[in-house]
Image (cartoon, rainbow, N blue to C red):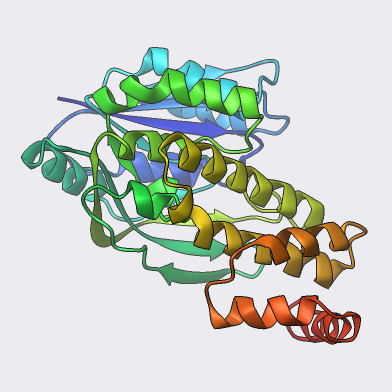
Length: 313
């Protein structure tokens, strides 16, 4: 039995050593291999990886000289995977629990009908040096319906059964490519959860680093909206595929509200479009209903914009 850890890197010279060390520090009774794919970083990331790979034979490094993008970089590493289980750690994140992999493997070996184990995570905001514990939503069993309301698993905490991953990876790749999605993990979790059980391990095992710019975070409001729209596309696609559109309505409404809020705060030119999209959603909470009412009138929307720009920007 073996665990394969997939690690994507791009311009992570300040963080990748910590990410690698977190994998090397794992205390296990099984072998662990680290598969690193660097997507033609323009800094010293590749040099750092090369140095570690020269000293640790369990590290397999693919150091690209031309950028292929996150999706191709991720799936191309599959040919290197030998493990019965796969874990994930981006080059700017890290594990701070040396028993993370052992705990997850122990559970999956005892529970053959489960294919994913995830844990709680700590968020580290790099530019202010602030770390916060983020308990994950605690779902176990068949959680497809919960996933269609929104993603609740942090990738850096996840371990999947390789057989389940291999069963869905081609389908996931096709959906991502056809829809030009800005993420890999969310559709991957959904497709696996449509076939297998998922378990939440109530431990803090990893740190997710929030940078100014990354695949899922940005200081650019239009990029923020593009990412959320990609999440909405995932929810829409799979809720229709599994005939569970009604289950996705609360998650869709919540994300449309988030987009509308961003547009208001930054006075984006497409605010009216985002307002209309939100007003069409089914508001299910008091907060949504308040926003829905205020969005309908110019005066109250301007008041809302003022309050948001004053207290939340």
